[in-house]
Length: 147
Length: 147
Length: 147
Length: 147
Image (cartoon, rainbow over all chains, first blue to last red; front, side, top):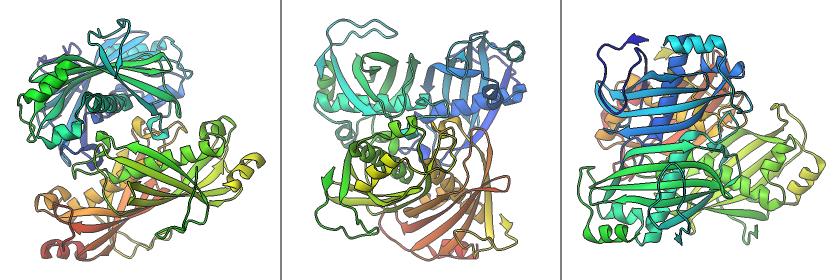
């Protein structure tokens, strides 16, 4: 978890201050016949970033699920800027863009050594283990709103 | 390829008339621990729809690539409405939302027997085999603009 | 479901007579930077074949699961003979190699218009919804042993 | 790269002494509706292990490819012992089982904190950038045979 120094410019406005950084190495299986990472891989990387963000905030998403709290994906957007290739080290920077009782939005910047590869956003609805809408427990709401 | 009778309502405006329908059966590997199809599967299904759309228009995307014409993914958006589950039959309805020399946008409605599962959009830039920007050949532009 | 005329030669001996054929079109997302289908895609195709085999036998695997009967994957083997490429039509021929109360083995031949792409085998243990070992219900055993 | 102290027992005999250890965290996208990691994920993890093994040996597989040397997958086998779940930390232990000019075999033990999850093996043929058979360059052969 790092303080994000200057406000970023780009597709999504990053108003929040906290940001987690997840580093991963591109898998061969993630590339396609164009020789670059297939675009459907990015939502998977965003999910990894989100997972690390919550863990660093204090409670892993696995712990959320064990408590009967799910973040169902309601919408995803990804804007691709530069391709990634096999074996490269990629950083996923995850922030919270919106945090409510029923709806949470994460923002992502995917980079390779400072070069922007993609920007993304995912909107989630809070649900219970049956995938029905519910509100966030108070402690998780407090946790999220501190980010 | 079918005529799309009434204008659809929803997240994306479907101004175009032509639409391809791709039917697929949900794979076990596409589900996740929530018991439903993982959200990163939808961009893969949209790509299948796009592939069938171009084939039905008269020239497969494989033929485009063989001619040195690529549609690099610039942006994707998916909005999830209802979950899909293993073994269900799903229909991907693909339309053209925007068609230019340098930029093409597809729209998707993913359904299960008339029930809307997700809506999506993908924006593509025209590129050559080195992934550099180029314009569409005249015949492909004509083909696309007929859709 | 077809009668399999002459005994096949190859990596696995096909003693059973019944065989299902699943046709699929190679997805772009299934290719890798070598320009061919990534090898980890084949177990997914084998699963599709297995799924169709059971459906054609009379009861879909989704129905098995709803009854609390699972086929947990215990072992997979794939031997690759020829590469597959984007947009090609591929056939998965699935047979039953071994069928017991506790253990079932499927065999697969993956072809493209008669050309052998890969041969595979998957061994499954019968389990209940908690993934604990159990025996097959009599009617499913009878179904399987008829194949 | 570590010295592997006692000879391991199990499905595959590990005669080689060197072993790389790759740690990864299970992705949500890697799970399936059974609540556990889908079996087709394991060949992808084995590939990650192989990639790290070669990097630690002194030359990354990306560098091999840049020199026109590919390891085409000829056969994979995986034997599943215990399931893995979302967010768990998993270790892939990779060894060399066989190393020749034309053919290389890797062995894998996938564990979670000492508990064996799966054992696997992958057989590779040496090929050039056109996927035609070739022999390993002398320096890579020496590198491999030192492992």
